[in-house]
Amino acid sequence: MIEIEFSLAVTIYLIVSVFSVIGLWIASERKNVQGLFSLEDAFFWQCSICTYVYVDSRHNAISKCPRCESFNKKE
Ligand SMILES: [Zn+2]
Image 1 (tube, rainbow, N blue to C red):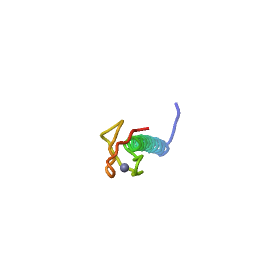
Image 2 (image 1 turned 45 degrees about the horizontal axis):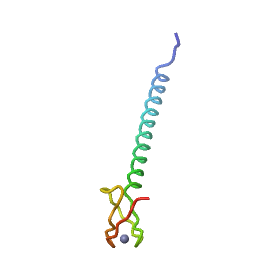
Image 3 (image 1 turned 90 degrees about the horizontal axis):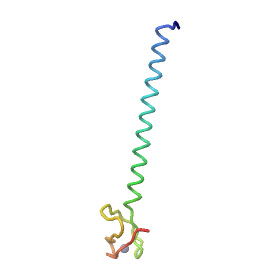
Image 4 (image 1 turned 30 degrees about the horizontal axis):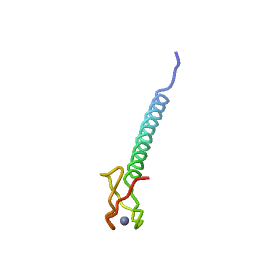
């Protein structure tokens, strides 16, 4: 049987638990950031007539520009 001191066992336990919490935190943050960027890219529209950039989350293929009221198609 391997004999270790109590303080060494506590130190190893603390290091393992802290690194697992940090690993889970980094993984969840990375997932949140990727979800945020994919949503923003899908909802951004740029008008082909007046080059106005706006956000429209309700339409996928064709959207109406709020400034000049012309219809824009997703490329
Ligand atoms: Zn426009």
